[in-house]
Image (tube, rainbow, N blue to C red; front, side):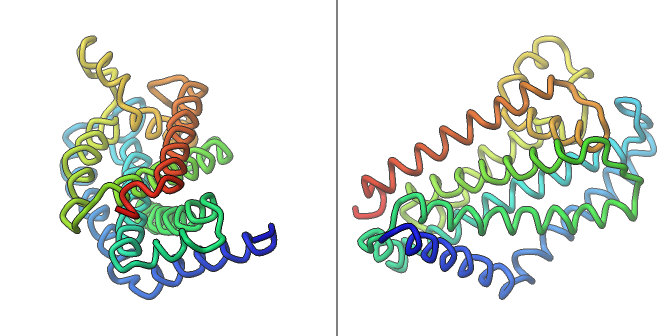
Length: 257
């Protein structure tokens, strides 16, 4: 297929993923929004009153960027892992591979779906957050860039999970035992300045810490880490995840087997 054909294929996959998200919006958009609303009510409103300020901000205000990022991460990942595994399980993916379609088209088409769902949920969670606290974005370009890049990283991560998954139960292992703990320990609810030196150094190895703080810097103007380092870490993981997906799909690993 020539460039025009590849772009048409990319548009078709992206459209399929988008329609899938909108068709089952009660499953893709509503549940995470309800969950995040409960976080705002319980942790922000009830417990936050006892905590007071954090990082120079009201606790609800400090926590909001972390919850927005957490919703983007989980939904970007969840959308691609379920969609890609479903395509593999039903045989659609094998048809795409044998078609004259470039590997990057398959990857990018599914990533677009993950990004759309992640950002859509993030937008709705942001609107919900405004009912509980005041948010004035300090660095819009930084906030949007971090949000989009993070969404792409975890969309690719969901694809890797789906490639190695052999049954539906396998697509929940990584989110439960890896992604969940890393997210909760990634500075969503606290500043690492509160941690002892040892645990603060351990937290530095958590990539989600850089994503959360990068976005928090974009929204509130404060961060526990250097913003340049945040971008560097995200871009490194993005490159590694894309290269891994490209290699696995090109070789047919976990797909043709």
